Length: 81
Image (cartoon, rainbow, N blue to C red):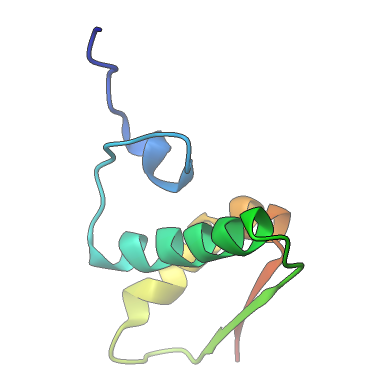
């Protein structure tokens, strides 16, 4: 069994493992993974993450925006006031 190459684009693809993540990217992947766990359990859930400009974990908003397409597909809304 060969080793699959790992790319930065894999970070929000739940079919890929291992992946390269920093802490804030891991929070985004966690949201996606929880939604997938819920779906596998037969639950129809959604997610809502809110923030504000300039919070202590400001990079979370940056990563949420970068993953907007994956989050939207998973029925997770990120809102930053």
